[in-house]
Each structure stands twice: as structure tokens, then as C-alpha cells.
Length: 399
Ligand code: PMP
Image (cartoon, rainbow, N blue to C red; front, side, top):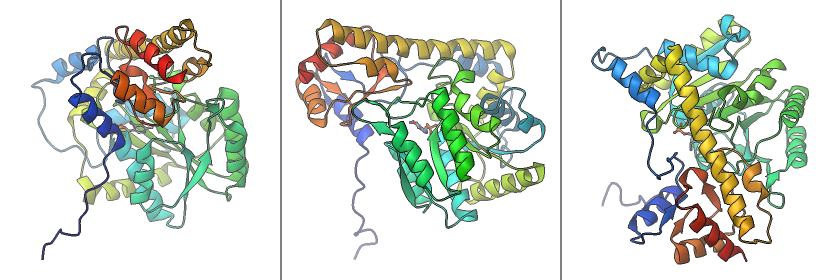
């Protein structure tokens, strides 16, 4: 008899599987548009210059002591300013309970566990589709999930009417997961006007919005603009929750640096909530890692480095926006009878192309182009060098 004989292998992660297959392909033409990490125009991973400079400044200056349980106070201070606004009254009034988290994933998970612990009968509405890990996170936290209709396959845009119906038909006081900007995987965001209507309806229904903001700055190139949805909800007086991540916008993927915040009714409530978030973190990982927090607080705490970061994040966003434009133009020039307008209407790292699983299979088997079978193209993997080849292959399998 074996202790673990009953343990079956876990299903393969669909995204990591794509990368494995890509690496195993010997073709010189191969293209990987499956990865969710930024690449430069040569297809190489990027370390931002502001990060390099911050590392130079902190090198050799610090000890390796533990951070406080809630993480770096300075990092949190700067991070809250990005989400809530430089002069936010909520920050001044100390109404925000915030802790450093293990990037965006850790922030979502900590919130899900908090939700389960203090409102054990609650559920969460999650947009369909969403980042697949959202389902895993709230499943493992044992919070039942409900669906929020979001994407409209025909228009390859937002199914706003159905989304509003689901918001209206949910029981009063429901939790909703919302992508603050650059929705993954669809690249479809509500317009400012639509966000205002969503916020209004949340108010009527007394729903709780939890914002996952994994791409602030990465969508438009401007972190302030990408925080617009959150700011609208704040203006309307909602209590909110927010997961922030520096994986994409500072390229700190492997540093696991992020923040979970919950806007409370007053300072006393915020103190209580923060203490409970720390209590949840304590038996899981005790306290968060120090290096990424130092990089972030060094950059955001220095005007010159912060400006460099703003320039660099805009550079990444602009490259992606440029590749969207070029991909659409290439397809149109090939005489594709289909509409490719959605490529430039969508925003952020991903293009939800509308390619069918069969078409994706053909791209892979005939053209060595790798992506997930839902047709999600990571625009970060598209370069000046491969865009012609990619457009041609897409044209071939769609006509
Ligand atoms: N939320 C969304 C919507 C994402 O796309 C991602 C990254 N793929 C994350 C959260 C979390 O990423 P990380 O944990 O690396 O910050």
C-alpha cells in the first residue's frame, strides 16, 4: 500500500502546455503568441531601466530582516496612490486596509479567503470568460461562483446588455470580480460611460466590486487613465476591494510583488480588517518577500525614477498598440473579407481573435504558431519580424 497511490496527475495548465510545445518545435519560423509576459520587438524578455537603476541604488545597502507582516509600508503607500489617486481623501483618512501580497494572484487569493472567513455564505460573480486562475482561486477558497455575462462573440466586444441584466438580477449585496482595465483574455473593457452605468447599478443593488488590476498602465500607457474605472466607483461612494500587481507594468513577474486593499467605512474598521488580513497571511507564508517591495518603493519614491517608469510603461503599451494596428492592416492588405476591427478596439496584452480551436490547431500544425485554443493572441509576442508571417498564416486559415 502506498501513501499517495490514489493521487492522479493534475491536468496540464493550458498556457504552460503551449510554451512546452513551442520550445520542442525545431522550426526556425516558430512564433509563440501564447505567453502572458511582455517581450520586446526582438521577442526578448525585458527588464526596465528604472528597475535596473533601483537595483543599483539598493545593492549592498540593506539587511535581510523580515518585513512587517503586512509588508513594506512605503511600497503600500505608493501603491495605494496609483490605484486611489495621489491626493485621495481615503488615503488621508486612513480608510484603506492594505497589505503587501504575492503579486496579483496572492492579492486575489487573500481577498477570497477573507471573504470566505467573514462572509461565509457569500458568492462571487465572475465575468465569462476570465483569467482561468480566477476560477481556481475562488474555488480553493470555497466561495461559490456565479457567472457574469461579459463577452459577445459576434461583435467580439462587450455584451453590455447581458452584463447589466446579470448585475440587476443578482441578489442584492453580491460580490463581483471586475477587471479594472485590459480584461484578460478578451481585451474588451467597458467604456467610461458604461462603467458609470455599471457603478450606478451596483449602488442600486448594494453590490461589492472587487477590482483585479493586473495591467495598470499597460492598457493605455497611462496608469491614471487605466485607473478610471476604479476612480468612478470611488466617486460614487462604493466600498471596494482591489488587487494590484507589478508583474506586468514594472516587469517584476518573478518578484511576486503586489498589494491587496479594501476601502473601509472608517479608520477603525480599516485597522480591524488589516489585522485580519495579516492573520490570514500568517499561517500561509508569514510575511511577504522584501526585494520586489524595495524595487517598487525605490522607483515610486523618487521623482526621477518614477518618471522613467512612466516613460517605460508607456513604451511597452505603445509597442503593443502599434502591433495591433499593424496586424489589422496586414490582414486587410491581404484582402481578408473578414472584419479585423476588433484587433484595434481591444486593449492590453491580449487580442481575442475569434479564431476557432480548429483554426488555432492549423496555425500550429501548418505554420508553427503557438497560442491557446481559445484564439487568444498575446500581442506582446508579436514583433516587426514575425507580424507579416503571422498575418499571412491567420489569413490562410480563415479564408
Ligand atoms: N489577474 C489577471 C487578470 C491576470 O491576467 C494576471 C496575470 N496573468 C494576474 C491577475 C496575476 O498575475 P501575477 O500574480 O503575476 O501578478
